[in-house]
Image: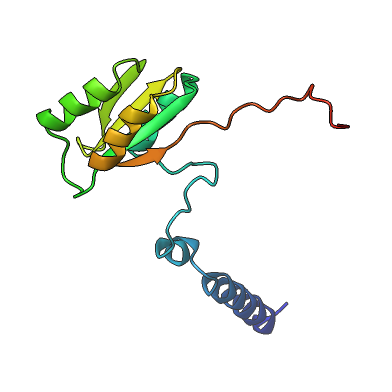
Length: 140
C-alpha cells in the first residue's frame, strides 16, 4: 500500500471527522425552548375559591356570598347588618380581601331577613341543589 493508500485513508478520516462535526448541536437547539410545565398541574385557586370550597365541603344546605353593591370593602356597619340578619347561620367568613362575606347555614334564612340582605348587598346563591327523592312514585 503506497502513498496513495495512506492519502486515501487520510481523506476518508478527514471526511468522517467533518461529517460528524457538522451535525446539529442539541444544547444550542434546545436553548431557545422553554421546558413545558407538568400537564397534571392544576391552576392555583384564589383565596375566595378556597373559602367557598371550604363552605361547600362543610355540607351546608345554604351557601350565600354577599358583596357590597358598589364593589367596596365590607365595613363594620355592613358586618353588623350581616350578623343581625344571619343570626342562625352556622358560619360567616370574610373573603376576597374583605370584599365578600360567605355565609354557610343548615337552616334557611327567613325571607324577611333575605329581603334586607338583597336590599343592601349583591347576593349570590351557591347552595347545593336540594336532593331529589328517588323513591317517589313516577306513575301517578
